[in-house]
Structure formats: C-alpha cells, structure tokens
Length: 348
Image (cartoon, rainbow, N blue to C red; front, side, top):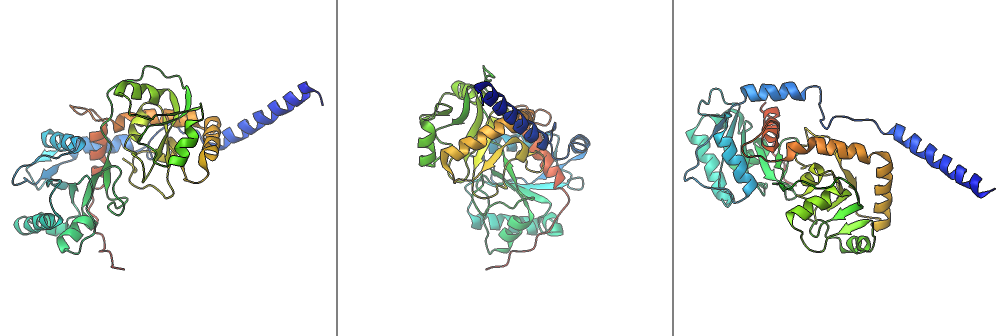
C-alpha cells in the first residue's frame, strides 16, 4: 500500500470515528436542568418570596467574606419581612464560632418563645454555617440538622451535607477579566488544586499542561484560566473552591474524585454533568490525558459554552444582579419552601 493510500485510510478512519462519536453526544444549548420552567419560577420568586429573620442577640458578624456578603445582602433586600404571616421561610442566624451546645440552646429558645418552629419541627427554617452542622443526640440539633435547610461553604466536610435539602455557597470570584480566549494549554493545575503528588509530577513534565508551582496574581490567574481547555481539581484533597471561577473563564473543570460529589453549588439548577468532567484517581497522567483529548474531540466546545453561560449564576455582585450567585441561592431556597420533615437517623 502506498504512502498516499495509508494516509487516506487513516484520515477516513479518523473522520468516521469523529463523526460517529459526535452524533452520540446530544446537543445541549441550556445550562439549566429545567430550562422550560426556570424563568417562570424565578419571576414568581422575585414577586412573592418573603423571609423572616430572627434577630440575633447579641449582634455578630460572619468571619467568611462570602457568608457576610450573603447575610448583609439578605438583610437589605426586599425579601426580608417582619410579617411572619407572609413569610415562606425563617432564617436562624448564629455566629460561626458558636458551640454545638450553644446552638442547641438557641433552637430551644426559639422553640419556646416563638410558635413557628414547632409547626414543622424546623423544616421551614434555614441557617448559615460554613463548616456545616454534624449529627448530635440533642433533640434541638437533630431537628436543625435533619429538617432545616443548611447553607454551607463549598466543599462541605464529609458527613455534614444532606443532598436535595442543603445548599452550598459559591466562593467569591476574581474580578479580573481574561485578556485572551486562545487555548494554549490542554490542562491547567494551580498549586493548591491537586495534592496527589505523583500525578502532578507526571503532568509537570508534559508541555501540554501548565502546572503552577506558586500562587499567581489575580490577573495572571485569569489569563491562565482563559488560555487553558481544562482545569484540574482534586475533590477531598486539594482546593476545589475555584471550580466556579474556572467555568466563568471558559476553562472546563476536571474533578478528580473516587465518589459522587453531591454538594456542588446549585446542583438542582445547573447541568454540572454537562459542564464538567468527573474522573477517578486511578490511571495516572496518561489515562487523564487520553480522557481530555477524547473530550476535546467530542464535547469540549459545548461544555465550555454551557459553563460560561452559567457563569453569571456563580458570580457575587454588590449590589446583587438578577440571577447572580445571591439570587440563584435564594432561588434554591424558593424551590425548598414546601416544608419536608425528615425521619431521624437511626444509630448504627
């Protein structure tokens, strides 16, 4: 067989492979799980949603900037009401350093001084705790943990998040805009994103990957996000808080984890499975690169487009804007406004 024939055969085989696989990937244009209903539901929320906020005594401030921003924005919003008859949900604020015993005492006080908790055993209440609340034997903490909506920081420590009930806060993102949209690297690994040293060492010698040894400035960070096709994160080991920022800047997140992730921000609103890759820890750099190259052929552009379309939902603004991180979080609360009582977890 001549060289030309071999070339044509290989080209035809590659064309058939790409064509066949591209047809197997559905063309998705919306980043939403329910694109047909989200607009109407959001409009109803803006028009009707009301939240009663218990007054903390004494007043306090949150130690996390994203928690503080959410709290102050809620206090200043039209959502807050002093009319408990029109309230859909009740917010229980307490200091981040409050002991579990003190939290239990707070719920006991709310139970005895107000009639609202006992109507649903706290299922129409929510609270803000960056680290989350664990399982305790005290009745007040059990009802708080099992019935009330927890808003925590992402990622939440293992065992302190209940899927389909609890919510996580997207991290505060960089305000720097990217200066280039040209992809120069297949993958980007920031110094604190992946702790698995063997994988990082293998990627460091590959010129298709940008492995950052030291933290970069916000502007350089934005440029590296926008010039990379994929951004690598390790769930449970590295710092995964930058995943929302990667989406906003057009770098498709690759999350390395050996178990399903259930506490991603806005999981009941956004199509995370269509905007990010989730891969296991086994296989090393060769397997990872093979998966990324295949994803480039099959659906990288679609994933990047969906991620950037969802980006404004993950951005915090002051003052808040329509459907930004604050309003998307409030929208998740709106979806949970129908009270649900959870059965107490039986001890092993």
